[in-house]
Length: 338
Ligand code: NAD
Ligand code: UDP
Image 1 (cartoon, rainbow, N blue to C red):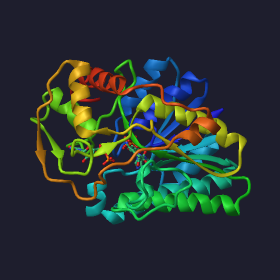
Image 2: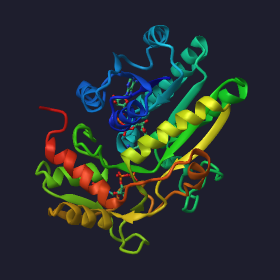
Image 3: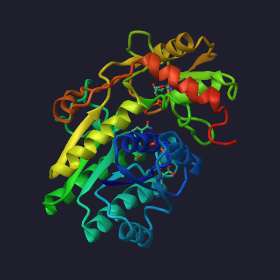
């Protein structure tokens, strides 16, 4: 079976490519490298000993996508191709709506033209909005998002759901990721954000490797056990495994199905810093700063549905996540740059 990874050179896409290749699938990647490097796909090939068909193209470019679908009989698409920086989305909402919505529409159009009926979509816990109480369950209504990035995810979920109402052959799996961290245990691929990291774990890793002075913890006066925000961190290889299982599900079913992918256990920012220091025997300098606008105090997943229907369960613990992050970062201090 041939799987097209739109945005497959990115952090989650490259790890999913490894999991799919290891499971015996053929993988085609299309990426415009706006937030990634071609080196990531080379490493995936090196790691797995398998070839990946790669296209440097924009997923919004319909002619390029038609060409890719003409050259490859795609059984299922996984749509990772999106802009994802929450703060930037507030500054550049039009760019976020254009890129994220347009990639989705183009994929759906080209899939329909070429007879591909299955798509797995990278959604986010952010679609639960500000009012739902943790643990989040798939049965809850989508909520009000606090930024344009979140709204793109919410809107894309709606677009994909509407498409399955109209096209009875279409199968859509919406995967709502919680907080992916960690790296492949080889340390050959990992998260390589461009510029100053927005997310906690890559920031910690860059402090540990000496690229940044200290971490600023955004707020210590939240109504949580230690005052810092709590999130549901999930190892990226567990997330990748969730995609393999979601593809299997998508090709056997029709309509829309939603799955949370999280561990169900919340950890605070201080828990993460302490676990990183302990697992890797390395100091992480930090200071407390003001809250970051839009951050919720805490949320985590109920992932029972993914367990019951997909047979998926997170196998890695926080120590694995911290160790594998550091293995990647210490072996690749500048990321994919040589
Ligand atoms: P990433 O930025 O590493 O990967 C996204 C990839 O898509 C990049 O390689 C980028 O170059 C590519 N891309 C973006 N727009 C494109 C376009 N128009 N044409 C072709 N390629 C394009 O991000 P990631 O962390 O791997 O996230 C993957 C997906 O998962 C994204 O949609 C993101 O919103 C979603 N997601 C991520 C997280 C997270 O914490 N990392 C959480 C929830 C959801
Ligand atoms: N965080 C922090 N300092 C940073 C980056 C993040 O204290 O430099 C906190 C942030 O406030 C949140 C948690 O770490 O409580 C996870 O943030 P991240 O951006 O990684 O993920 P989010 O849950 O916001 O998508």
